[in-house]
Length: 604
View 1 (tube, rainbow, N blue to C red):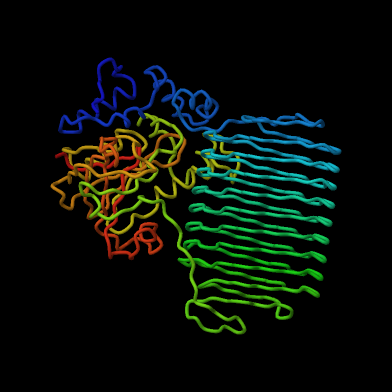
View 2 (cartoon, rainbow, N blue to C red):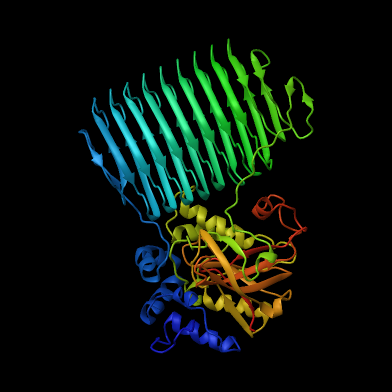
């Protein structure tokens, strides 16, 4: 769609960007409306004022809330703790926007029910410090914490610490979140005769990090159950440090950890360490997962008279790197049983006495010591239907699934190029960036956001790739025209119509006559201001296609797809090969251009 310049103040950043487009692009094709909607909303006066502040970065930092508000940036609030204490029965239906210090501390009897904490929110930063600490005979429920949230930085410090009797239930912690940075410090530590369950921790999450430090430590006669941790997640890093450590007479069950995940990085350290007369069961660890890097260090170490069972470890379709160190080591009178251990794994340092292995699988189907292999593999990681497809499907009449092409990034705007040029943008200047954007926590989401995006922008290009990160519309125009020349067009999928359903392909048009061509694709990066990662890769074909409703055959969208003809440098574990089969260099791979991403190519 054409962006009308009429009425736009020429001295605003948006007005300047529109003039720059007209000057640098040698055709009169419509400008991409969505891109100019992301131009800086600063007025001419605000632009001048913040440009002056940017020259002195310390001054800009002191004005950060106003700068973020006026420029439409992604900044996290500086929240003060809530000093509220709740000693009576309380039911919270919804809670958002503050740090929470005490809930249900020293409660005797009764039931507390916390239903929703920071759910369905965009850019969540909060802390829950204490819940049911030192309670007696108290039942507490926490139903939802941070569910369906986007860009989450949350920590939960203590839940049920030093509680006696009663029952604790935590149902959902950050289910279906995007780019989380999560810390759960302590759940039911030092409890006495307490029953507690944790049902779901970050299921269906995308691209983030999480830590769980302690669950049921120093418990007496406790019954702990953890059902699901990080299952069905994509590119997540997770660390679980202590489960049931130094428990007495505990009955601990961990059902699923990292099941059906894609490229996980899981580290589990200490399960049932130094327990006494405990019964420990771990059902599934990284079952049905795709590649990744996993370690498990110490299960039942130095325990006394414990019953230790591990049912399934690493039965993956596409194996990654797995290391299991210390199973029942230094235990006394322990009975240990390990039923299944997967392919391409390293098992070291386990108790030779009292340990039984029912099945040990490796790639060569041989016998390793007393561990018998079966050679069996399980189902592969399921890639979202329609996310990748073959070029042959781009034909009129083809019915195919359309993935979720919606833009799930937080809303932000570009900064004017003059302001961007005055801000640091390199890993070597990360400390300066952190000061500007108030990223005081070394492991917080803002710090991670800054460091991850800088690392991606600074990494060496892949073979044949030309790349640049751009933080203004002018910079994007400069990069695209430097690769393709001035007679270019910026194309994107028209809308999100048809997503998550079946679609029918209508009329198809190949750019440059359907021949292999050059293009520059630009994808959003997560950063305080709008930042695009733009790159040109060799040997692609670009298509436009009408997208139809398969029943009515009415037009519901107009899609842009790019087909990578040369996939020889791609990883064997890439989702495209998991979805379509085959291997690098053996097939071409196509995908749609998602909402608010774009690809530049020659103008037809």
